[in-house]
Length: 235
Image (cartoon, rainbow, N blue to C red; front, side, top):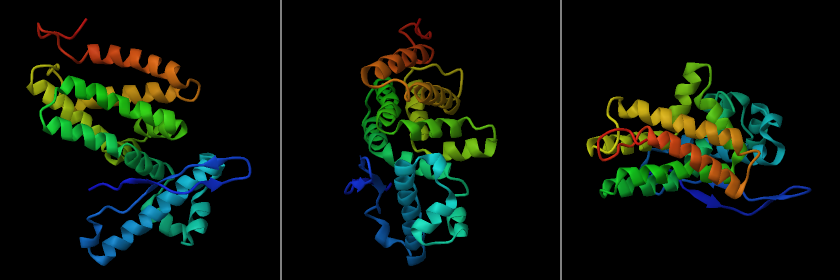
């Protein structure tokens, strides 16, 4: 079971208040060996502290040393868990989107239409853009990082991407989505295009304007993926 999201008390800064979402322990964690429980507890501490610092100071103003000092651990400890700061953003964003991912996966298992579910899945990063625009920009940048190892690490950090693969695979099996390209490749193309499109605009647009722009671009992408009644990509 994935970690959930809890809302804790506001963190007061001099000029504003920040509502902070934090990673919490999963309900089945008590059955794990003590060593593993301690590792997970340390990981949560590092991510939660980092997100607090990023939110209050700004991502670029926080170093691994700052996070280590706030957690009362060594820089080496932070580095062992997260060699670079962006991995903490990815861990947080995965948890941030977890509820929507789990709901859609349950709907897919119950046999709901994969095309409708894919549209719902595309709404998940849009919601993240409304709540955490700067963090989503960092997520998109990591997915397209010039260092392939970092790009792969970003892909493996997000449970959102495997969900899109599952939906596309179901759509292909149902004859509702094109099958001339593997589901994993189509899902990656679609997810990356959507995330980058959102990230490029979410810092300048808000609310209905952002929603309308992203929805229009998603329609273009979906029309190349979803088949019409004749078995061809929608025009």
